[in-house]
Image (cartoon, rainbow, N blue to C red; front, side, top):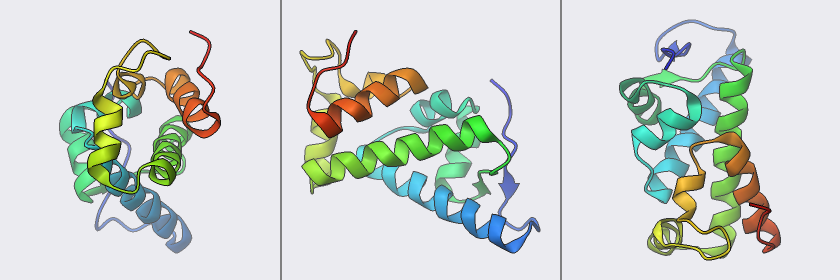
Amino acid sequence: MASASTYPAGETAPTHKRQEAADLSAKLSRASVSMGLTAMTVGALLNLQNSVAARVLTGEFQLRRSEEERWKRSTLLVELFDALRLKFPEDTLMRQWLSTHNTAIDDAPVGWIETPTRLEKLIAYVVTGRPPQL
């Protein structure tokens, strides 16, 4: 996996980019904690080493807008969280759904988070209620 091209928390960047990066990084962290995701799962999705993913989740590093693929994947994870939050107002229910085998996708939904294609299908499934094409 590639190392992160992230901003160390104190590094100078244009103000609007810093704020945008801080906002997405905070949302990503909040979503990951609420869904019970590990740095390993987030790292796999974002193509980051586990230690770097852990730093992103704790706020020590921020994502860069210029890293388009990583940025897109982060926004997808936040989108999944937002969709799940509408169905499961409590974190424990959300985590239980994510970790329980789902017959519609023949897997635990958490297993679909590590790749962008499956993550997009999972989001569509959560939003529409229609099982994805396997």
